[in-house]
Image (cartoon, rainbow, N blue to C red):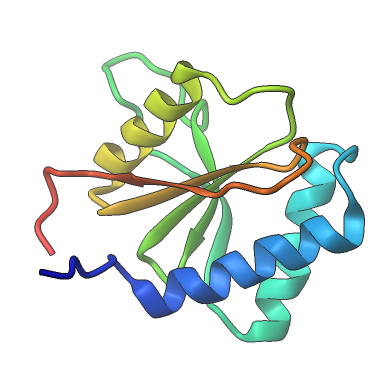
Amino acid sequence: MTEKLIYEGLTYKLNGILYSVHNERGRFLSEQQYCDAIEQKLKESRLSYEREKILPPSFLGEARGRNKIDFLIEGKVILEIKAKRVITREDYYQVRRYLEALGKKLGIIVNFRRKFLEPKRILNSKVKE
């Protein structure tokens, strides 16, 4: 039995954009520079997106705007960009919190500092497809 990937066509396009940016820009820019380059490629590919989407407060008294995701693509996929030596467990938990806060099924986290790009898919099992 073959398992179906969530948003296969969309994530295929996204991965193409991510690899293209990594190949063109290298691995030693800042997170914001990678986000700028990704945003340009999203515009060129005509994919709809929101950049730095602010999440609702997760508890009473939390300041608005404290948490924001790098990109929400096509209203479906959360894309979190990192430019650091290693992606930590906390980074994965961060994406899972974002998925739960927005009620989305799929998040992708990618670290541009790595020599070889490895986008990681994170699923929210609480959302049914």
